[in-house]
Length: 180
Image (cartoon, rainbow, N blue to C red; front, side, top):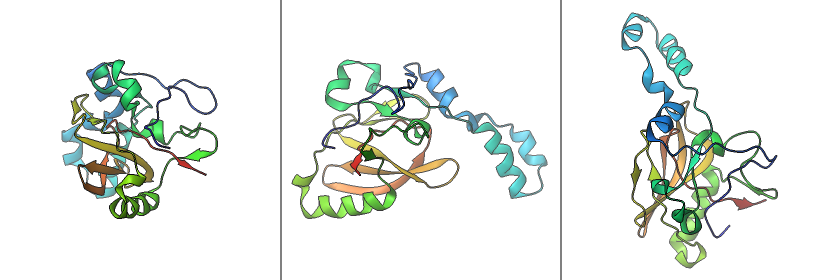
């Protein structure tokens, strides 16, 4: 796929909610930040703490335009949170899939060997608090690989620099699909 994904529905036709409001984005995609610190102090094991935090991490699917400006849709596509990207209804169009971390490792080497084999669309990203950053400076692409309960892996491109990181699942990143 030579451009960033730009759809507002899953493969089965169900709509993906658009969330322009930063407070709604933060609340919907980052509920785990609302845990009760007093409860954590009372817990005796890491397992109990992890379970408590997981109860507050229940993000829903969402997409947005960069800076909530529909004019950015045509050039940059949409930004999606982790749940939208990995929803069982399928974000990738039929015949395509969301790249894995391993797919990104191969893509990284391909781009480093021959940058002309990948079209850079520097769409920036939306942080988990609802703010927007780095349009026309860098690109962030979700993979389908989960790092842990709170983070997923993504590919970052900044100029000639390219690498794979783990990021907060409440962030909004672009998506590039790979042909099956």
